[in-house]
Length: 220
Image (cartoon, rainbow, N blue to C red; front, side):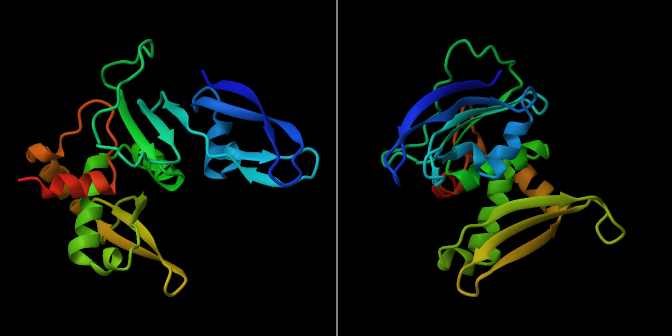
C-alpha cells in the first residue's frame, strides 16, 4: 500500500507554516491516481494555504508497480560519491524473486524508467541503444550536452513488421524537441548484445542510467 506522512513545512514565500502530504511510498495498482500526480509533478508540489504560492519539494519515494512487477527507489539527487554499487533492499518488502528493483535519480529519468518498464522493455538494452545513438550514430547529442530519453513504441506496420521505437532529446540550441525513430529490430539487437555481454549484468537493486552504461562500456 502507499504510505503518506503529514509534514509541517514553512512556505519559502510567505514564511507561514502549512501541512504537506509526503508520499514515502506509492503503489500505483492500489492508488492509480498517484501515477498521474508523478507525471504532472503534483506529487512533489506544496500549495501554500496562506499565500497560494506553489513550491517544489524534492522528496524521494518508493514506487511500486505490482502489475509489471517492479519497484523503483527514487531520489531527486545522486550523491557526489555514488559508486553504482547495488543498493541494499530493506528487509520486509516480501517481493517475489521475479521482481525488478531499480534505483533512479532525477525526476525526468524517474518518469522515463517507469514508462520503459511499463512497456515490458529491458532497461539495460534501452540504455545500451541510447548510448550507441548518442555516442556513435548522432555524437552531436553528447557533444552538445543533451540527454536522450526513451519516448514510446508503436505497433507493427507494413513498413515496420516488428514495430518502431522512439527516442527524443531537447535541442536547446534551436529550442525544440527532436524525435528519433528506429525499427524495433534495432532494440532487439541491443537486447541480444546485452545478454551476451557480461558487462551488462545488473544484479540486485542497481541504478541503470546513462552514467552506468558509460562506465560499463569502458570496462575491458
